[in-house]
Image (cartoon, rainbow over all chains, first blue to last red; front, side):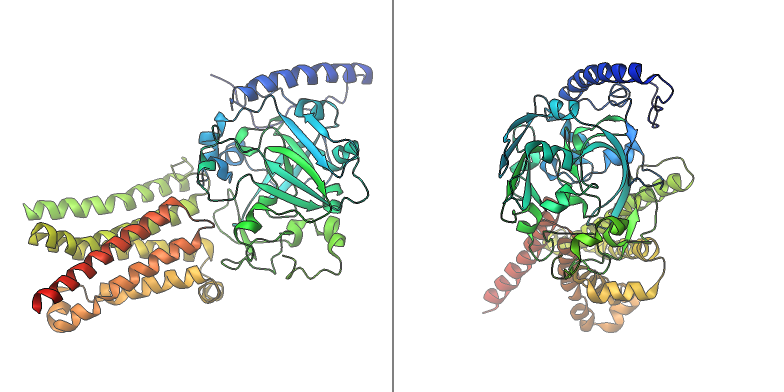
Length: 315
Length: 201
């Protein structure tokens, strides 16, 4: 019987620093290889992926709220490329091959190109970020992501001065994604951020979860997490990042423009046309009685980005 | 024979509620259960789904009767209709308790401001007089007006399907299937009425 544990491995603070760094490098390279193998097989066994990110330090902005369980986070997903039921991604995303995987960076950058996801991981300072995620459907979770600040990656590719927005694109591979055959959304899934939102320290590219490799249904191998916006803006399984001058089109806005805006900041005062956004249900709790927080509780960090903006118009 | 069938149908209609009840009990007592990661959404969806399904089955009785000549099938219609109402009440109860915690003000706000909830409320309200006049006494008492009153079931079914479609973020197979079935059941009736009018000329 495999021993499963939901707690991340302890941080090695007592090891001499030189040993710690060398060991970390060694573990990381072998872990990446192992993760690649595991992820490439489409396996989702947490015990096998357990050693994937062993020495990740705790990042800033984390919350102390009770984290949702591995089962909840990996079993209840909106990833319509695999079907519209919440259990479809867990059931069908295993078919997605996540290695080899490159993120094509283009548009208004000085260093465009195809960046291998393993190189991105290897060259980054990974951190654990425990964030709230608030879905537009009025449910939420608390998730311990492993990732890197998007800003650090963007700095590496060197945006040009004319760049004002960042556009992201998800994989579209009909042979591995059964949901893509139905035109429920306009594929491929695209999302976008204003450049200052993209460079904000809260915004991360996530590659792991609970110390383990990001499962396919959660957007493997690399996804965005923008915790102060509705969950659909945290685009999954990114294959392309493009810097643009014009505001990019986004999938849900194309689908229903008066329901889903470009900004989609979590805002209890701006209701969805068809349901209220003033309360939410935390997964694990039974009652939908949690008051929704402005900017999902990250107002201190991000409110200044929208100073002077009418958030009812710029929903 | 008919009695056996009626008992069988009675039990069959009760099964979904029993399964949901059993799983709710398991969840409540900490033993897990099969309601999934968002149990309230599962309960809401399942009760609503069975209300709609039974409503559609009720609407299929007369077409089946006319097409097969099996008149006795009419004896199942009341039970099926009342069961549809029963599941609709369960559906409403889950919403009242777990989405609103009995808070009347937020319930009223939802009903007034969220079109899909307005539709759902309408669908249920239209069922209420039908449930209340489902007794043999009422059928006898109302006579021809009973038949007219119970035409409200068409409006209720349409409201229920629209409620479901408007609740979903996108067009999904499930809602479209129910819409197609309802459309077919209504068209059959139109066809029958048209044929009857032509024959009468």
